[in-house]
Length: 406
Image (cartoon, rainbow, N blue to C red; front, side, top):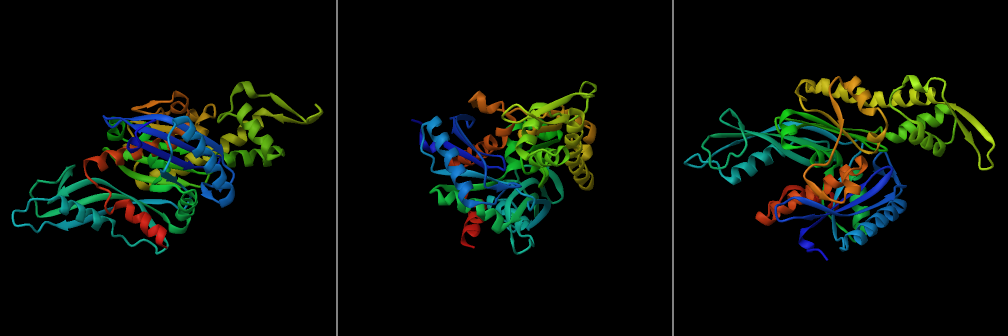
């Protein structure tokens, strides 16, 4: 049996699967994955709960499987959230240093971050994250730890991720209904980036794209900090829907064709190739043209990358991504998707690998588990901070409090 205080659990309630990852935080702060539970997801559409009863059953199944594998009792989770309503933007906070000796204290830092968070969001929205980027002291930039330095004016840039409160609450309430505590909610795109990027890649500038069943989340790092985030309500399920419509086959059959014969690009080999669909009795129902199938897939996937490219262009970030693009999520398995992304985004693209995490190789090498592993990794960072001193006062605990009171 493992020491409960060192156990962190990431829970992702996705559109195509529910995944619970149990991690053990080692003495050096690194994460060891000791349990994984998953279940097919039925009560979720476009990354958000659509049928509470079904989703609850799927979450329960995934959690029980993870408990059995890890031999622990799960009491609380770091819960991943996504959806087309989630937005991110950058904001600056300013705070005058009033102490007589002008030395910046921890209270000054907390105050300037509080000022940066005090933004006029629509009343129905809540802040999910306020991530600090860089501090400025009397106009001097690039300061990472201002405590103890001298100055009269402290500023901080933060990246704020927010979403519609009621839509965030649905998944929190579902988890609480299963007698589990929600430690914090975490944007899935942020979680994925924590699992796969090295400090060097964050410094150079990197784009992480997580293409799931119902949503595509993306995060941009530059100069070591998050500069931009986004979520699009389009994913692998839309590819299957397009195939069902375009090939005139049932959705379950379209999904199977996508997995067995799909590709993100048309190649010479597929010209003239066909797939014969038969019924249970072996009678031919339909002959599908492989070139047509791949063309439908390619168009939809290209659209996802074009939407992201436009977003980066508007944010003026395209030139900052010197480490390139990292793909994860279930759709990262589609053959040639990296090549298509490279062509559309005009920069190097690679399939993501989890970094500085040990444990179950079966989970660590699969692109669809990256977000859930990242949620556990987020938990391990929080665990480390908690042991040093309780930095969770305020912060997201209060966000959760507000979400649950409403």
